[in-house]
Picture (cartoon, rainbow, N blue to C red):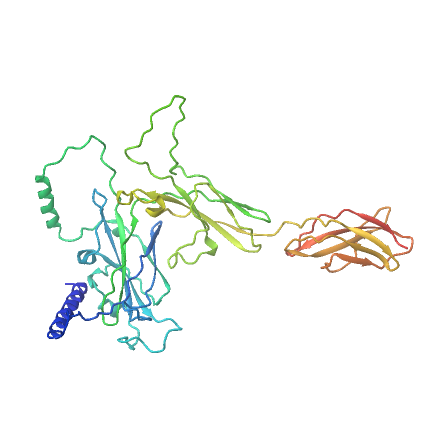
Length: 465
């Protein structure tokens, strides 16, 4: 008997004891209140190639509303099964837990800003090791492979990563197979009703299901989370390396479609009207692409890579304006929607999704080689102190300043009048000779290293007094 069964038996004994104690009291007896860790909200399972990312929030309260809760650790189990021809998969049960594989044991601690007083029943002993905790898990025999072991905080997001191996892809029979054989024999004796002559439906793909639940310091189990599934079919191959180009405003990423990409079904255009029809079997949903910035992602064995945008069918992507001097590494995955009859009433986005391996990353250091626009509106005004110049503000965000250049006819060779760029859009040239004729032009510099220089402004010519 597993500890899961033992816990259920313990609860039954408590309820019976409560009934006996309540004899003679007025009114219906009440069962004793058994406080358990809250149920873990439905995890999100994402398969990327041979990795499965299971994400959920660690509970931070008990079933009676006490927060922080008496939560000692979290257990995560996985099981590979083959859904039936009707699309049904195994529901969570004691037999399911007996057949499952333990993939994570996560000690839970209080948040830093929690009360200094520990919840009732909490232990103040030294932190246990994985070997110590395996003696207390609900199905000790399930720890047949690598078991993730790291500390998590109540109320914070948890990510458990499982690497799929050939062993994890083999479906497991839940319960006693002899009972299934007896059921099959009974089914064979039943009369088969007549059926229309249609092709048999495609077999359901094998799936790997995941469940998580919290355990209190008294080894009491919270209710298990909902089961979540990932399909165990061959993932789609990646596209080739992406080509990256950019300018001052945006980054363009393009790639070639892989030959195995699922394309949308297009109906033929016919001149004569035809009757409307509905296909007996729906075709597969077309593939989509998901783009990632590998340089901005963390360790894929610890956290799920974050996509840049929602899946899209176009073999291109436009990223936001570049931040120069940063490194971007773009990779693309193909997303396939795996058909499932048990999910036939849901949209593809809510069904079984499978992301293939990433394409080779294309990395680029974003370098600012784009000059500012030429200054405009240059005006020269003569006064007793020299020649005053004003021009319009360039208005660009990465502008470092302006350089004023001057020349004298007839050759009008231009020379800068300032050592450092001017921040203001005005300058007074006092180093002039009365009667001298001068030509002025202005250019803008940006903050790049080395700076990019704009084209010269239109010239203005003026004679000093």
